Image 1 (cartoon, rainbow, N blue to C red):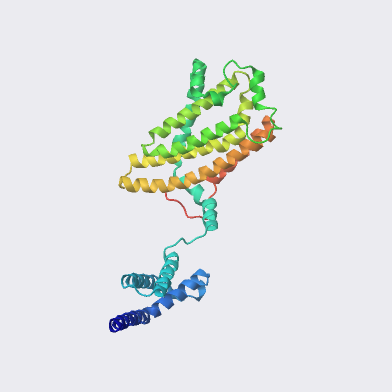
Image 2: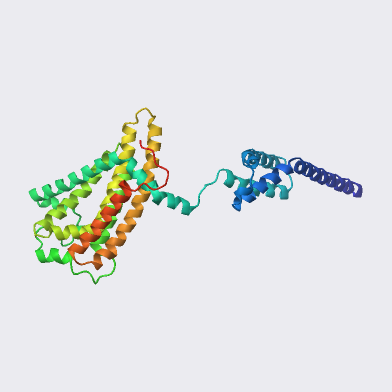
Amino acid sequence: MNAISATSSTAEANAIARAALRSDRFRLEREADWQRLEAIVTRMEKGRYRRLSDDDLLALPGLYRTVASSLSIARETSLDAATLAYLEALVQRAWFVVYGPRSSLWDWLRGFLGGGLSAAVRSIWVDVLIALAVMVAGTVVGWLLVAHDTEWYFSLMSPDMAGNRVPGASRAVLHASLFGNSGQSGMSVFAAQLFSNNAQVSILAFSLGFALGVPTLLLLVQNTASLGALLWLYNGKGLLIDLIGWLAVHGTTELFAILLAGAAGLHVGRSIAFPGNRTVLRAASEAGRRAAVVMTGVVLMLVIAALLEGFARQMVDQTFGRFVIGGFMLAAWCAYFFAFRGGANRVRRA
């Protein structure tokens, strides 16, 4: 028994020695490349790009592939744990240097607001004009429908949104819904519901664009038809200008966001319906990237609209002051989207 145990121990010791020797030989044969890659990665992580030679930069992709191959071999041959851990960490660090993002969140945000968003909006200007025409037409249709038959008002406006703003309401009731709320903090129930509705419309208008843009057009008409019905109601009591001022504070931002969301959805649908010389998949992919940039801006605009709706409109209790705020926001958005160029990379038009 002792002889058998001694033989087994000797065999085990020999196996360990051979494994250690194989691991040492593996490391010695490739360690120079590992160390060079580690030195390059360390300098790049610390931002010391000036200390890197042209040869190092040119060799970086090849060194990364070499070390990644070494890691694969080390896993297959079950080398020692220390070598495996070292190679895994080095390959992970090198991957971020070779293939990882080249800019920080701040750099991306600066590029996005510094020209990327406005360029994306300008690149879909045809769809913006189509969406604008549809929204104007929807408002007119809503006005005419309710003027012809007041029952349409209840079809276009949900009971929760309408509240006491219904046909037959007195001028005093409608006037009280526009003024005398400067002491309130935060959004009124109607304002919150209106914002929630418009946010849902913006998301749906974009997401339904893949169906050749038809559902997007219908959604824009339906949403603005309710606006036309509301305008008709207040016009009947001589409060049209006051209502427009009440809406202008946040509406010039919120409706602009809906306009851009609808245009983004139409852009995707139009690219699918008319891909030109491109394949449908490629056309949809390119349009989707541009539309995604626009929708990121739409989300930002909706947040700003919520702040204006919740606070600025409640604090300003005069129609003129509301027009000043709304007019300023509209001018600012138009200047940013259609006049501001910035220094960011331009988004190519379809």
